[in-house]
Structures are given as C-alpha cells and as structure tokens.
Length: 118
Image (cartoon, rainbow, N blue to C red; front, side, top):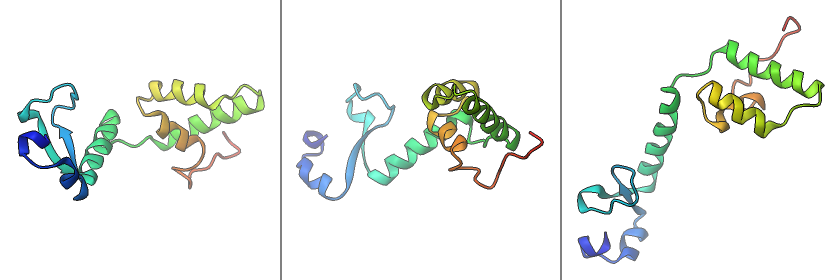
C-alpha cells in the first residue's frame, strides 16, 4: 500500500491509519481490495461482523436462565468445565464462545437471576 500511495508506512501509521482488505481476504493485495482506515473503523466492522453471527439478536431470558441452570447442575455434579460448556453452547445457540461465557458468569444479563422454581 505504501508503494502504491507513494507514502512511507511510518507516516500513515503515525496518523492512526491501518490497511484494510475490503473483501477480508488478506492474501488479496490488489489495489482495488486495499483501503486505509482508522483502527476504530476497522474495530467497528469486526464487532458488527461478530454480531451478525446471531443477526444482532439477543438471547432470550429463557435461554439465559437455561444456560445458568445447566451450569449450576453441572457444578453440583462436579462436571462443569467452562471451556467445554461454552464451546458446546456457542454452537448450539449460534453465538460466540465469549457471549456464552459472559452470560453464564453473570457479566451480561446481570439483572436476570435464577429463582427457586427453576
């Protein structure tokens, strides 16, 4: 990109610019596939892309309670292993590992608690 734009890479890095591959294929270095963007713009794209895994839809309260209940049951049986749990349910609910991890650890949906009925 530096050769194409005839600008030293240090110059555009100093201004917080990065090279982005428009089609997300890092092996495709064609001029029409490269653009300079700010880090925050690239980050926003990545976040939107990750959200699109679930089409931006939140888990239902019922799903959150289910995940937390299953975790509690497995903890009681001494069979809970977070990595296995999060991997399994991320596929089942079509969410990222991090989303499931945050839900079961109460980082997200913190106001939603299990009740004695469950």
